[in-house]
Length: 597
Image (cartoon, rainbow, N blue to C red; front, top):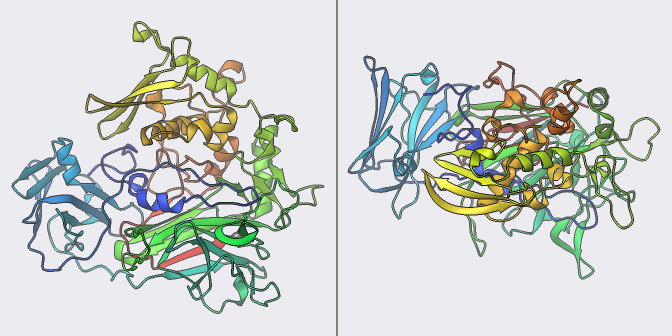
C-alpha cells in the first residue's frame, strides 16, 4: 500500500477527498434564503460507491490475503461466484490516525489497471509491501449484478489471518451530539436541514424528533426559542436523527432568529432566513454565532417519499466558507470503523482569532471584520470574502469595494498564459489538467488569450468530450460562483480546479503544480511586484489554514503540516478541507463540538 502522506489527491484509491461524494452532495444542498444573505454552498462532487444494503451473511464468496515475502508483494483474492457491478476492497485503520481507504476493483479492471486480474468471477489485486499495511485490516463489499450491495465480509489482516471482530456498528438510527462549552458560558444550539421531502426544511428537537421550520417554539419558553435550545438546560446530549441532509448545526450565544420563508404571503417550509451581516435589519446582528455542516441518511431509514433515495454516509465539517464567529472543534467517533478524528480551531476564543487575523492580513481583508473597536452594531465576526462588501463590484447605486479587482491581474495573466499557439509550444504554460483515473483536460483561451478556456476531455488518451470556462471576475473567484459554478459536470470540475488555484495563489503557476500544497499561499517578493500581482491569494482562507488543527497523517512535500480548513467553497479540491466522511452508512457513535468561547 502506498504511503498515505505522499499519495496524490486524485489517485484511484478512494482517500478522504474521493470517498466523500454522496455525503458532500447532500451535505451541501442549497439552502434557500428569503431576504437575508447567506450562501448556498457550491462544492465539488465526485463519484461514490453504490448504496449499501444488507445481504445474507452466508453468501457463497471466498476471500484471501496472500503475502509473498520473496517478491515483496501482497495479493488479495475475492470470488463472489457471480458477476459484479461493484467490488470494494476496504482498508480499515486499526486505530485513529490513517484515514479509511477503498478500491473499486470492477472500475479499476475496466480502466485496465495492471494490478487487477479477473478470471471468471474471481478478482485478484496485487500491491507491493508497504510500511502502512500492518496498520489496516481488510474486508470486501460487493454488488452482484441486479442485486443489492452485500454486508461487509469478515476482516483479515495483511497476512490473511482473521482478526477479532470490531465493535458492533451503530445501525439503530441516530447518534448523540455532545456540545462542550466553556465554564460559565451560555450557548444555544439550532439544528436545521432536510429529511423526507427534499426542498422542505425541518428543525431538530433535543430528543431527535423534528418539526417543520414553520412550527417554531414560542420565544418565551425557558429552554427553547424559535428553533434554538439552550445547551446548559439540556440534561443529556442532543440526539441527532437517522436522517438529516444538508444540515447545519448553529452554535450561538443567544437564540437564532431564522423565520421560515414566505410563499404568497404565507409561511413556507421551503426555506428559512439565514443570517446576513450585511443587512442592518437582520435580527442576528448582535448574536455571536457559527455553524457546523453535516449530512446523513442511515441505511436503516425507510424512505417512503415519492422519489426515494439510497443511504448517505455521514459527512460533516467545520467551515469558514460563509464567515467566522465562534472557534470550535469537532470530534467524530465510530468504533466499528475505528474512525476517530478531530478538526477545527482549538484553544482560542473569538476575540483571540480576530486579533490574530487582523495582525496577519492586508487592509483589504481586514475590512471583513465587524463588531470590534467602535462597531457596536454587530457581534464580533469576520465576514467571508464571498459575502464581504469590500469585494463587491460596482452597481447602479453602490460604488465598487476596495477589493473589487483584487484577482483581476492574476486572472488576466493566467488567461494570457493559456492562449492558443501555433505550434502549441507558443503557449507560455499550456493548460493541461490531470485529475487522475486516466482523465486529462487540455485547452486554451484563444489566439489572444481573452476568450473562454475551451477544453477537450481525454480518457486514457481518447477524446471523450469538450467544454469551456468563461473568464471569471474577482467576484466569481472569491465566491466560486457565476462562471466558476456553471455548465456540465466536466465544466464544473475544471471550474472548481481553476477557482481553487486562484484562491491559493496558484493560477499562474504550471497547472501540474496545482495539487502541491507546499506551493499554496506564496509569500510576496519585495522586489518583484509583478510576481506579487500574479500570486495574490485569498488571505482569509490562508489564515484559517494556519490556525486549524494539523492533520496528524499528512504533510506537504516540504515536510510542513497540513491544516485542513474550509476557507472557500472549493477548498475540498486536493483534499485540503475539514470534511470528515465515514466509510460506511452506519451512524457515528458520537459527535462532539467543543466551543472555544
